[in-house]
Each structure stands twice: as C-alpha cells, then as structure tokens.
Length: 578
Image (cartoon, rainbow, N blue to C red; front, side, top):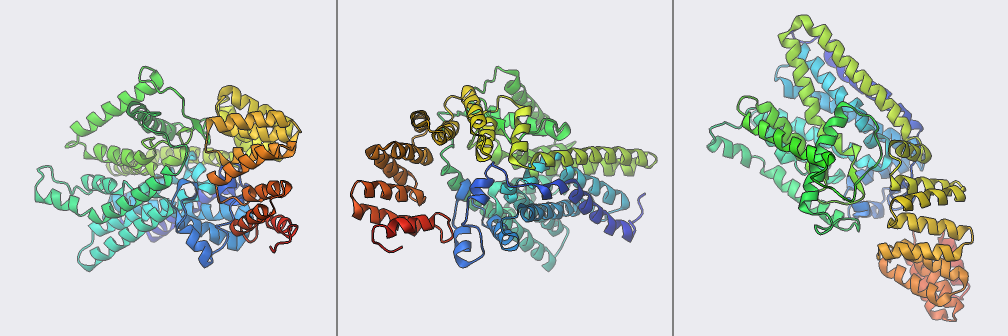
C-alpha cells in the first residue's frame, strides 16, 4: 500500500472527514441557548447584534466576559444579521467552523507525516483528524454557542501550523509567502481567543520532531531555528498581555495568597493527567468540574498526577535523542495547555472539556503517526490496524453524538451535570435559575438551598434565592440573602441593586437610595440602576436629582432595549423630555 494514492482517495477522504464530523454534531442544530454564559454573551447582550461601525468598535475594544475576541464577536454579529435570535443559525456556524478545522487538521497531519504522501499516510491522517474532530471532548466547544471563540481560534491555529509546515518545505519566494500566511493566520487566531499564545513553543516542538531542525550538537543552526520564531513570539506576547488584562478584570481571579504556587502546580498536574485520561476514556463529562477548596499533595487525587507529570517529563528529556517524538509531543501538549491549567486561576473550575480543543492536536498526531508506521511496516496487518482505528473513531463519534444532546437546553444540561456530580453547587444554582425562569419558584428555592448547603458562601446562589424569595413576597428573607451575598462579594453590583429593590418595595426609601447609589458606583453601565434611583429621588421630592438619573439611564441604555420606554415615561412624568 505504498503506491501514490488515487485521486478519488485524495479528494474523498477530506470530504468523508467533513461529512462524518457534521453528522456526529447534528443534534446541536436543534439546541437552544443555555443558561451558562449564553445569557451573558448572547441573549442578554445587545452590543454584538450588528456589523455597523458602532458594533465593530465595541467588538474590537471590549473585554466583555474576560476575553478579547473581536473576530469571534464578528462571527456572532454575522449570525445575528442572518438568523436574528434563532439559535439554530448560531449552532450551524459553530459546526461549520469545526468541520473546516477537521479538514485543516487532516491537511496538517498529511504534511506532518510525509513530504510525499502515500495511500498509507492519507488514511492515517484521516484517522487522526477524525480522532480530533469526533472526540466527545470537542462537544463543549462546538455545541456551546458562548465557546464560538474555541472553534474560530482553533481553525486559524491549525492553519498557522499548516502554513508553517509548508514553509519549512518551500524555498525562495514561496517560503516567504508561507511565512506571511502563518503569521496572518496566527493573528486571526489571537483575535478570536488568545489561548494559542504558546504557539512558538509548539513550533519548536515540531522542529525537534518530525522536522528534525534542532541539531543535537547545538551551534549556530540551533540558534537560527530559535531566532526564526521571533515574529510569532512578538504576536504571542501581544496576545498574552491583552489576555491577562482581560482576565484581570474578572473578580473571580484568585491571588497567590488564596491559591498559592503549590496549589497551582497541583492543579496544573491534575489537568494534564485529567485531559489525557478523558481523551482515552471520555466518560462522565460535565460542563463544570468544581475546583475543591483544598488541593493537597498528600491526597492521591492530586499527589499522583504531580508524580506522573514529573516522571513523564524526566523520561521524555532523558530519551530525547532516541525518541525525540516523545519529548516533542509532550512539550507541545503541555505548552498548549499551560494557559488554562490554573496558573492565573479564574472561576470555580478545576478543569474544562473545552480546554482540550487545541491540546488534542499532539495526541491526534501521535495516533496518525503510529497508524502510518503500522501500515508501512506491517502491510499484512493493515486491514486489522485500520479496522481497530475505525472502531475507536466510531465509538468516539457515537459518544460525541450522545454528548451533544446533553447541550440541548438548560434543564437537560444541568440535570446531566448533577447526575455526574451531585456536589456541584454551581449546577444546583444554575438549575434553580432555569426553574425560576420557567415559573417553578418553589423548586428553584429548593435548588438554591441545596447549593448553599454545599457552599454557604456562594454569592450567586444567595442572590438568586433572594430574588426568588422576593418574588414570593418574602422581603425580609430576600434582604437577608442579598446582604449575605454582598458580604461575600463586596463588588456584587446586581445583589446590591436587588437589595435596593427589596428596600424600595418595603417602603424604606433611604435604604433603597443608598443601595442604588452603591450599585451605580460598582457598575455605571446598567441603566436600571439610575432609573430606580430616579424613582426613589422622585418619591423623596428631589425632582432635579430624579431628572438627572432618568437622563443618565437613557444615555447608557441601548436604543432597542425594551426598558427604554419605561425610563422615557418616568422622565416625561417629571416634565422632562426623553
């Protein structure tokens, strides 16, 4: 099977990869937006809905949600222009981007395996691409609309690598063109999401193996190869600065005092091993794996992964001359994961399935290389090797199809998360909010209460339970919950505002005025806060202050926001003009 591949195989395999990938994620097209940041980024965010100059200016300047992702926002703005608020259109775009990435991975693996591909390498590249594309760990990035940044940045990251590989096998002007193509693709990847900032290390790993451009005796040749990476280093450094600035705005970022160097090392080692294990046995996948309060090196759960990482690193370094591919793959895998291993910890997650989107590429390359070698060295066993690879890929594809259905809607998602881990206090809270929006307030309160039993200091559950209690007329209970939420998070503007509405409803105008004023100071971008303070000021006889608040609310309210007419009526009631 070493003869050149026929045309039908060269054309048919990438088409097969694309079609099978699309088929395994088809349930996503029937899915809704979910209450897991889709409300923050899509359904509750009007700023991305269009491609006008104002919309594009916001996209290219905002750090909304702790990410700088203007190109991803552009794709979402295009979705809104085409589909409005129909989630099927958004899911279709994410799926198409993932399909394109799968085909790009196929082309990249083909370039990686051999400069002159044979039938064996085409087949091996297809298996590697399908391992990447159909793995159930990809579901979170593809089926969750908020993670559009994963599939957008992932596509351009793979194209960056493909152009780099082509550059190394080109000469003269063609080499320069491939260099520019790689740098352009990398720029677009960083503009979609900055998690590819360790790309220069990945390029060096490719130079080590299979390109063999790093001579063991060092010297000028090695220096030249390293210095060659400077253009990518400059882009990566810029992306890293912007990414850190975006993440630093998130209040959940943990300081070294809260999450020390040892804890971060333990979390990083756990993630490295966790993703490897889930890549082999992808069971009990969840939208959120809770970060425990105590990460101890004395526990098997965290001590063993650290030992595995240390031993594997030593083995890879010691055996680098005989097996450079092991060090190259290990280096690339760890480098790609490093930005999301908890070094700059934000949020309650210990790990996340979506973090494997790029990190799975070295694993796909190893699988493709192993299969190509098996097909070339043992042609009699080729059918058996292909059958085994096909069975593995098919099993992962079936699992991905089933996992995609988990993301059908919010209730399905959080019921699944609780089935995986009944101690997930975030899942209890989010299911409670889902139930509350559906009108089942008693069940929502029960879910919030369970979340607080598991984590009494969780501000979101306290705020949400307070809101649920307030809707049932339990104003005292609501104020108590809001007050506790604020005590645990002094900058929780929504909880301060909600407590103000409870005071307002009870007739305590002085307390309401104080809370609304504090909420405005914490978040001056929400028009509800000055509007409600204007109502209180009006009730207290401060018409000038009320007019000022209503005008301020109109200035910051979006033109098509449904509450804008209410503010205009409030202002008109004072004799002003809205």
